[in-house]
Length: 114
Image (cartoon, rainbow, N blue to C red; front, side):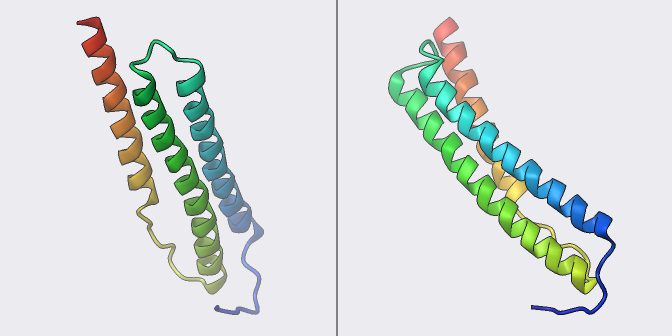
């Protein structure tokens, strides 16, 4: 761990905290979507399909929570050390997972309509 005697500008720390909270909001939204797919969308494909979508969404929620904490810790450490902020893969993983679920829902919806 890098120790620096000078405290960083508090605005950077607060911005980092807001980013962390955005990750947590994403996590909660994904969990809500997972529950909604199973409980509130009985016409969206078969029950096993809805359950698989819900599991993927819940896994993405968990990944979002873990990624948010990791990102917050890394950014806080980098800010305090005066180092450049590192880029992570988490947004790409989240986007890919959501695109996969969206594509599956579109396919099931279109096949049902046709």
